[in-house]
Image (cartoon, rainbow, N blue to C red):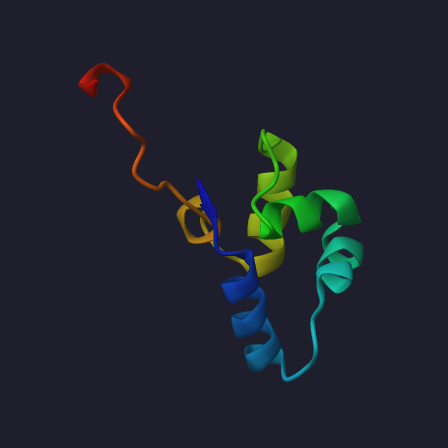
Length: 78
């Protein structure tokens, strides 16, 4: 899974003509900062459904805009 959070932040900041940080996203979306940070840095292990819903609502986007599935290695290909 790849996060497009930084891209969405940049697009929203440009659209709204203001500076938006990870902390701003956390405060305005209601998602804890450490979770926003973990998603942005791709260190999160599980994506809570409510967090994804809040972020998609905040950015007015779909799940596929927020997260992208990257190629998963085939375990049977050994």
